[in-house]
Length: 70
Picture 1: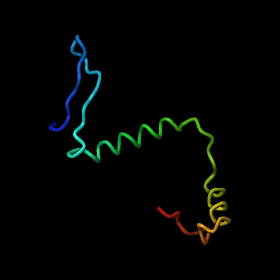
Picture 2: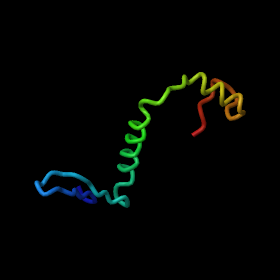
Picture 3: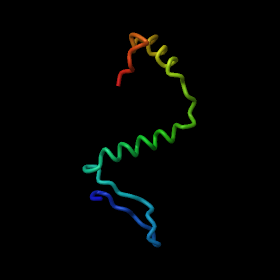
Picture 4: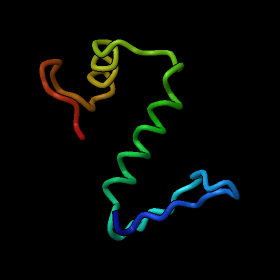
């Protein structure tokens, strides 16, 4: 795959990778999303209805049946 280079140790094992972001920006974005998701997997979760209620109260969401702004 062009734009991807592996760094190996003295035994030839892959230990790191270099990604050309001009070519593979979307790939890096996906990798970053996975890393953020994994880092937050033990965080306390908030039910969606509670989040919507909080956004409505703050004036950031007008009705509970609307989707959240992106």
